[in-house]
Image (cartoon, rainbow, N blue to C red; front, top):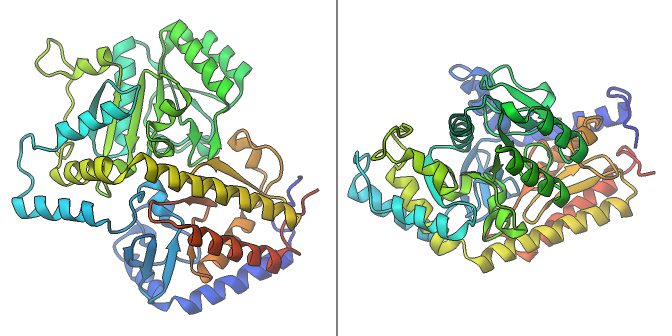
Length: 441
């Protein structure tokens, strides 16, 4: 569908203004806190993705998949900390592990009993990871993986994909960020088999790595086509280029991570978010011959520092969550609920003749107010962002905590009743605003 020019829908603008006014009236304490925070924090914010107009809600606590805000409202959490909140907001097993190490002392300055056990669990579960190193975030994990690839291959360049996101200084939407790490990047289009193959072959002698998410997260929950991944593995292997799979988000889509689910063997895999059990976490792993370059007892070893790489809170919480809570059956149930939710939302969009598509896999998905196949971020660039803004405001006003960009992430505490309630509320939204939402042709 051809999107309407932004600014052309006065009825939509009026609906947004009305929703915002109701949101402001319902959240005076969050509004006041936001204004006060501006005195110390630029824009009252220290993490850009959490900001939205007219101001973000201030959250004060959580239980299971419920959140509470400063004005006393309770929400069902469909953000799940942008996938990091996989375990919900207060898992008792993880909380007990954190309390135990807190009572035992922290910042000890040496190895602790948990880091090797967590490493062993990751290596045992994720097929492409033969060795693993810990760090503090997904951003750091990807930086380390890319630098490792350049050092191992002796080549300078990295191939990434337009609209991709691999961390706060590795973000490639809308032309990229001026703050990006200064690697010499080449860019291709996600799921473009012929174009990407040609680019790899053209620059093979200079390419150290190809990096991608097997399902773009920040790019709109767009899945890589199987033949696209197959081509990438074949071309990189032939040219001696390292294939790096960013599984910071997607490793939650299968017990053996996404690469294990589809039978792909990348050279390196990066992890983060939920694996720390709610504490700061990142990891990069892969082939033993690559990661063993970090063995400090070996000649010419790569140095890898980081004061909090093995901090005892992340190690204890991560090990407990990964081995005691994140069972195969629990993951299957959560991802099954996500598949059902995405299917139902797509059916509702068709029933109401609204031009919209929900993309994704399992427990991760993204609503786009465009119709038709979505194979790359370019397929949604013409969408009018006001539709998603209206959706977010109305869902928040109805007790559903959702993201400004339309992304939805479930957590382990979700139930069938939560899904049924959400789809009922979504249906009400489509009914109420059908006249101003884009029409499916």
